[in-house]
Image (tube, rainbow, N blue to C red):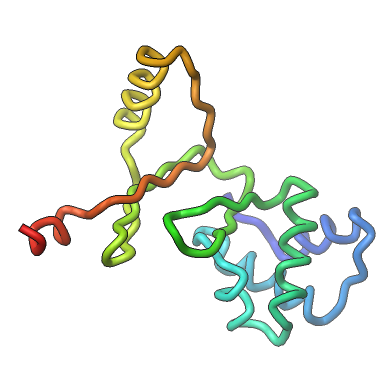
Length: 140
């Protein structure tokens, strides 16, 4: 899904926020990089705004249902568009590489958890940490 800076600004307006130059830049940065998992720090490097303004803007966009945050390993929260389809990741604790977890593998994992415990997990964004194939090979 592509989103425009104007759509993001409209969401901020609908939440009662003033539209400042810094918020325009933040929204432009998010729109330009909409397909990425963005941290507040990575957004801050591309704009002339302090990190607290970036966090507050992301918080309001999340309240408006435009973005979601999730955690991928031990690093900071990442933000992505809320309308993105479910997607799940395997994140290497050593090199930081993230790769998509195939949907069939995720479904099998959920089925196994449900069969074993009766618990039905629901997650739009999931990250499992461990070692990637390459890092495991150098560890052997």
